[in-house]
Image (cartoon, rainbow, N blue to C red; front, side, top):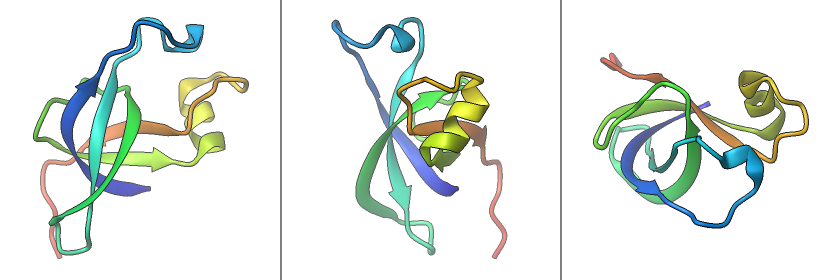
Length: 88
């Protein structure tokens, strides 16, 4: 799992049928100090996250497929939570 900040949305006209009616978000991975790393990933949104929100992301295919509940889904990254506060 990793922390990231939603910085955009992804729109595609041609994609695998799995992605039909699913929202894809562009997420900037956060460093340990909470600053943006500039390393982006595309994740399926399962929690209705919005731009600028800090999110918890699973970035491992098998775990992502378990969250989606589809063992054959072509997915790697899934947003599983919106972070309200971080205490270090």
